[in-house]
Each structure stands twice: as C-alpha cells, then as structure tokens.
Length: 120
Image (tube, rainbow, N blue to C red; front, side, top):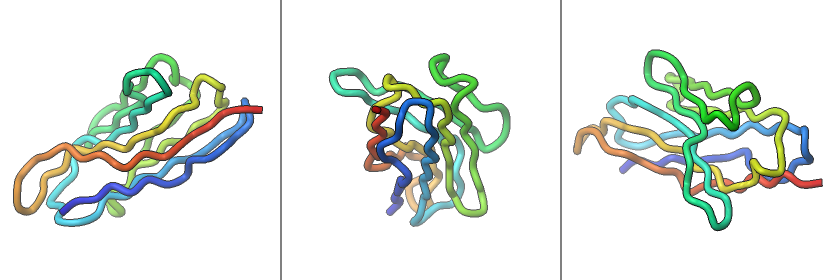
C-alpha cells in the first residue's frame, strides 16, 4: 500500500506565495517521476510541473518563472513553491508519483488533492 499525502494549500491574496508538500509512504522500492497537477472548477486536470529522479524539471507555460518544483529523495517528498500567485491559479492541486512498489512493480499514484484559492 502506497499513500501520497499533500499539505500546504489555503487562501492567499494575489501576488502572495504558498508552498505545497507531498509525502509518499508505504511499500516503496523507488520513486521515479514526481509531479503536481491541478484542476479548476469546470476544467480538465492539467499538468503544473514534474521532476524526474534525475534530470531537468518540466513546467506548464502558465507557471514558468513563478513556480518551482523540488524533491527530497531521503524523505520521499516533493514540493511546489508557488510565488506571484494569480486568481487563475485557483484550483485543487494533486500530487502524482510513478512509484516502484515492493510487491507490484511500477504504478501511478495520486494524492487526495489540496485546495489553493487566490483571491482578495
């Protein structure tokens, strides 16, 4: 059993900052790609940023220069630092990870989501 638990969402004013965290736990052998996606009301879920176990990060054009993804492999945790937030960043943010489990091999896992609301 593998779980991804997110934290750090909330209400922030335009121009403000938030930091999301997502910790993976359970029967983990190794973690490949980790990332963040978001889904606004009435819209499809979209990629925000991804970070592989090695190599370069990837960002949606809409967040480049404002958001930074990072990970702590020792803690099985991925972070999303969000600066200069805009109302259009309002969404439920989901953590995603491609994890090799001890029992079943590679599988895709999702967190439960954390709400980010940008409003004055």
